Figure 1: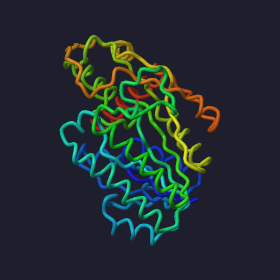
Figure 2 (figure 1 turned 90 degrees about the vertical axis):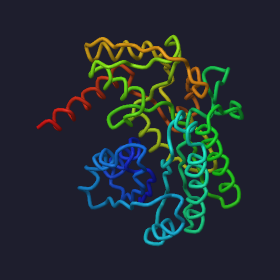
Figure 3 (figure 1 turned 135 degrees about the horizontal axis):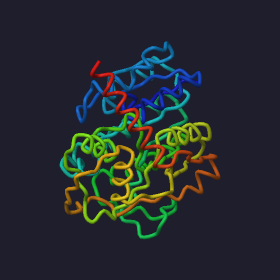
Length: 320
């Protein structure tokens, strides 16, 4: 199978490329190395992929129709996995137009290229943020998602709707995957687990919004990759799936767990809760379990140990 992975150099994208190659597939990665965080980190993410002849990287932007036309004319893809996006809720408050441009216009430009090339299978990485402050717990795919509370969340819902249009008009099979707070080795440095770990190790203040009762459904990277692979295999029609752990953790409990793993006390700095932050996320994964055979394996305590081991080993390697 030949696969195009957008956002290939990112946290999730690089893990997916690793797994696809290990399973014998040919992968073309597309990434624009957006300066949201270090390009050096992203290139390290792909270090293993660069060693394999079944992987190639195109440095380009999903908004660049000419670049996409070239990529699709040079390759006959069986499926496209679209992970590229401007990510982050708080960042979208500061740069809403940029998020709309990349996440909405970029997704439509990519789907136009998919349509023109005759590719019939498309997997779209959506987000748990589309649920907003959903009052029904846990969040199910049939719940109303008409009330996002950040430009990022709105852009992801827009992406789902655009995907449906292309499914309806051009019979492209689409799987929209609502990912719930993914963590693990290579996690973006701005995300909570990565950021908190580094701050605790450095003896610096850890920002905690509100009283610590905010909760997130933290999902380990290996489980997310398993879910994406299952969605690729089952891709038909137009379907939406939650991929989460279905075990939300309070923010204060997350910090306590990190303290235990690191054997070091956190210095807490309490801050007001931003209006763009949802109170909790909690995935109902029954549909994914039933239709995809999705079954998360890694609980948070184990996943945090794996992340800390990766982070500390990387730090030791950098010192040598």
